[in-house]
Amino acid sequence: MKSMNTSLTPQPPATEPATAVSAPAPAAQTPRSLLKHLQTQFPAFRDFLPLAIGIDKQLLAVMPDLDRKTMRTALGIHTGSLRYLKVMEKAKVRHDLDGTPGAEVTDTHRAHATQVLQERFKKEADRKKAEREAKAAEEAARVHADKLNQLAAKFAKKS
Image (cartoon, rainbow, N blue to C red; front, top):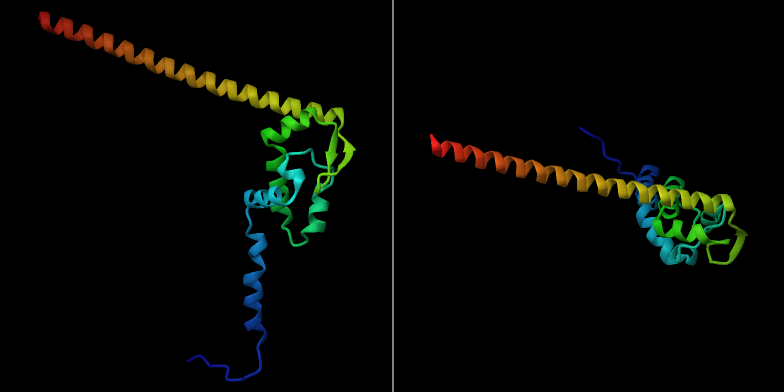
């Protein structure tokens, strides 16, 4: 039989689960939900402005209990988005969280955005081409099978 604690003094284990339950709440945030939160809170994210180098440090200063891995994933989703890359391709300056202009966007970073966009468009075009070719091959196989069935039916009647 288990012994019961009849003491009226608070026990440390009783308070630990409460903090353990409340602590993971920020960590349980998904990268996409964090990104939506950042887009509602900061103009630089909402308007897809080119982000300042070190924006992760700015985010951690404003939101200290932010999970770094989730934040980095959310930043990756944001900076890899089509809208961000299109803006980055033509951008001249980077922006802080509040949208104030900062450092200049280098030609290397603009060229990288252009290259990533070109690769994406090529990949999408190749995928669509392969899809069209597969449909065409499927249709050709169906037409061929119909013709074979017609010939088989024609010769089956003569016998």
